[in-house]
Image 1 (tube, rainbow, N blue to C red):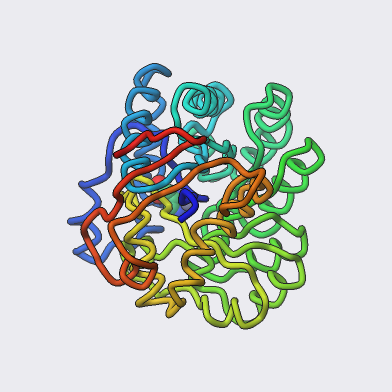
Image 2: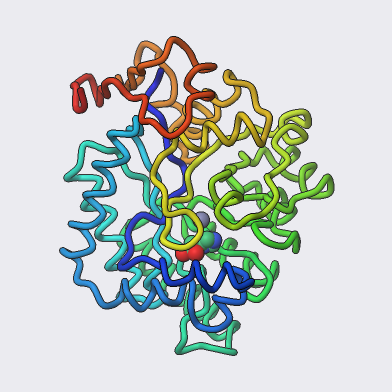
Length: 342
Ligand code: IZC
Ligand code: ZN
């Protein structure tokens, strides 16, 4: 197949969040843990505490693992810095990974991932900082191609998300949005209205959110391992496809809601829970994923003129690949024409 593309990760971070599982098993929700100062904010503390070289070394190991799982291009978001210096630190790590590692890395800035503790209860004041200080500096330093925002109950409202994304667009950044992960507050409609390149998660999106995605030409980037990990519903992939929305499937690798780098597990879940066909899944993990990060003209299919990124599998076809579960079925990986895993 073409090398697989992981179009959604939060791969540069400090620490893990294993201590959240007992809380979740006692009934605490993802948003309750965040409201109590844990969740994303826990990872922010652990990421701020690490130096650039420490974050780099850790992330490099994650990219090695992705490559072994058959991924040849990945997107990575910032969003565990939440202030100018720490967002820039994370984004410099992402840029360095792209230049040093065999993996191609696309950089997304996400300073509006949560409200940092310094701005607790003052979300609009933090949005001012994002729009007036953080995004302009990131754009000036060419540290990101895209801007993403967590549009969610208790995090950033539709209006706050719109402000962030409109500012990002004026600065020349492409637009992405975490929409309807927990609650459908209107993120998918905003994505359609702004013609964002992609909308992510869409777990709670209903018909009224699917139409704007279709009319806005927004790629739906679905993250089935997160549904599994948060014990949530699975996005309505069949309805999206039926309405003409391009569907990509990614991992969402992050220390809270998806501590897995195995994109093959996303393929299994897309088959069983989204009821996508093996052919649709192959497209979702290659060409549609490439389009979701703006690289559809360079990678995502095996064609003359495109980069020779290939994954060779111990399987005779996508049906077997989507059905087998838990083993790494990669036989070899070719990146830009060179064998990097065998
Ligand atoms: O660290 O929890 N959903 N952001 C929005 C995440 C998941 C990552 C995290
Ligand atoms: Zn995410």
